[in-house]
Amino acid sequence: SLVEYKKVLEPVVCEALDLKRGTFSIINRYDFASLAGLSCQWTVKQGTRTLDSGSVLLPDIQPGAAKDMNLPLDEALAKAQGETVLYISFRVSDEVLWAEAGHEVAAAQFVLETSAASQPATIVNVLEKSSTHLSWQAGDHRWAFNGQGQWQTWQFQNLPLITQGPKLNLWLAPTDNDIREQPKWKRAGLHMLQERFDTAEQRSLPGGGIELTIHTRVAPPVWAWGVKVQYQYEIHPDGRVLLTVAGQPEGEVPGNIPRIGLEWTIPATLDQIIWRGLGPGETYPDSREAGIYGVHHATVDRLLTPYVTPQENGNRSGTVWAAFTDILGTGFTVASSQAFHLSAHHYSVAKLDAAKHRSELIKDPFITLHIDHLRRGLGSASCGPGTLPAYELHLEPFCFSLELAPIQDAHWSTF
Image (cartoon, rainbow, N blue to C red; front, side):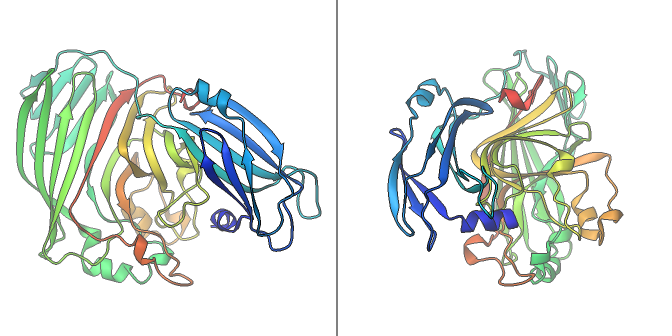
């Protein structure tokens, strides 16, 4: 929270006037001090690779005033061959009474070039269908669904990539700020949703793939409201799985909900997480100013924010691509054209919800993974106003897509 607070109050604002020409407006938000004595350090990165960097002293910009500044970005832009990000850091040039030399007082970031997320290709083989449940194999890839339409097996080179496939999830372990909403959510049965299998259809795709469409209904016991859900899987011979999830609410749905997304479990060995999005710390829809866009790496243990009382934590917003691998770099990736929210824990939502102290948490033998399409904001109801209307989340018809792909020899420094 203090990191986010620092970002909101930072005394220097940098606005892009012309990114290709490297022209920016520097605004002094101080009431009495000029910006003389601050340096501007800039770095252009493509993933984790630095294309160019430099440092300039800021001009004597008076309190409340603004001046234009130019950065030499031509060389970096000439090298750019994909998503390229400019990071700007405003730092104290010389030691002062309140800070050492090099202390950062403000920062900014800008995306210079963008490209679609991509994953390493695998060898394409003819896809084969087996007669056991719903299962297929293509080269080193194997997928299996049970008779209730649940994705149970995904293997790459005999390595299990999931322990239980994705299912729609609207619930979380309430935070301290959810004190006013939690009773309403539980009265609506959001914490005990169940999924009923309805139908499944399968058809062949050009190129040897399979399309499997599963229809279900997600609802709490007793209550009449629910969500009709369609999972559409496109399974391709190169190992990719394109998953599209669509939901249609029915009945008198709750006024607002915590999240709309997918929950699944993966092997505990896939605890190395690489993601392209906001980081390195947790971010949420209404608490993301301090997040830095780029490629980040953490173990599942490091994704957790250890609040005194266990609760929802560790979300990473603005994610467009993520990899989940073992220490050798074998696992799978998730990518989307729409930014999503990412979180992964050694504890289930139920465990985080039930525990009153961190010492009560015992790790599961698997990792609980959440890929969320939409999230409700945190608000500050534990000590002030609740979530602002702009960050509320209402249960309305939704549709989102993800591309899943196996990966090997992945290391965060290569992205």
